[in-house]
Length: 431
Image (cartoon, rainbow, N blue to C red; front, side):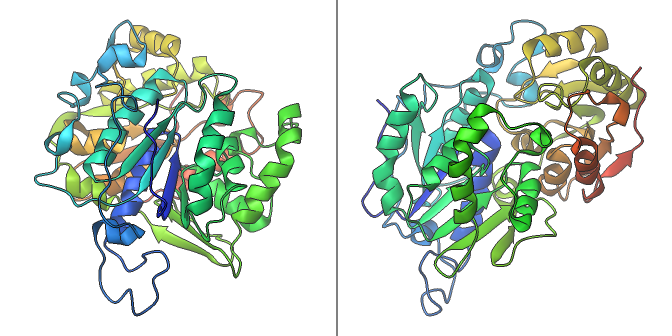
């Protein structure tokens, strides 16, 4: 059985479904542990920095997940389900399992942060592996982690939601990584928390804030324009309720913690900048190689970009810039990656941690090439002060599939155009 989080005094409860979301919860906790924003603190209580557990209204550090929550170290090819010419952990610059404070790159003990972090585990093996590694880092920081097999069968959602209900009713603050998630939206109908926080889930955060400002239903950008399915219609009341709860009023505060450029925040939504200070404090600086590395994207898997056009673009981009390694997105399919390896000669690396941590630990190329994605915003922040250059290549409109959302090209161009401290490349040939 999964370890059960918690005390009756739990003030901050966080829900994550991806490694990047978990990373950004750690970044948020780091910022708030050194700020004056402890939940419920008035001016007299917040006169100086708070540290560790105090920042979250807890009495002290709490214990981590037991063996049932984290099933051991995840390494290389076995964890990703890729059984061919795909490099594992060693190629990503991670020498071994992350266990304990020393392995996470922390020189000494870290004060407990007193946050209860709930992992709503997906079924994808690569994502699960990265989440397990990130869960170990979270425990190193003093957080309590609760691992939920939230998608482990037909009855799993009922067990998960039923088991979390008491914690949800007691929590004073809810932190979430994906407000578009149906799971998270269901959980929001249970909580009475007065403070809600949305941490980055990549570029989706930009769309979430824009939709909230316009009063629109919450729909992921690559699905916009399509006809709602039967499940969308059935779930519509829950989604509408979640949107109302994520709108601040005199009884509820809403914070968005983001490294993304956000220009249209609704009235009352507090924007806090994520500058990856925790990542920079804990890891690096990296060893920098002379070559170039290429960052993969899941735009093919989400039905936005044609697979043949994508492969041709990767081959052209790698050839033009001398890239030798391809860091795969965790959602890229095994078949696609094998084809990329065979036709481009690139070494395919499936990182076992989010790329921001992999890059910060090194070794990493002097140039990082990317298509429009979250990393064109996050990597310059994580690598500030190094000599690494991040370059982004636009998506040519001819690469889009006929089923791509009408908003796809504009959204992807916005991701590139708003990125700071990156070099913008012209679109490469993909014929």
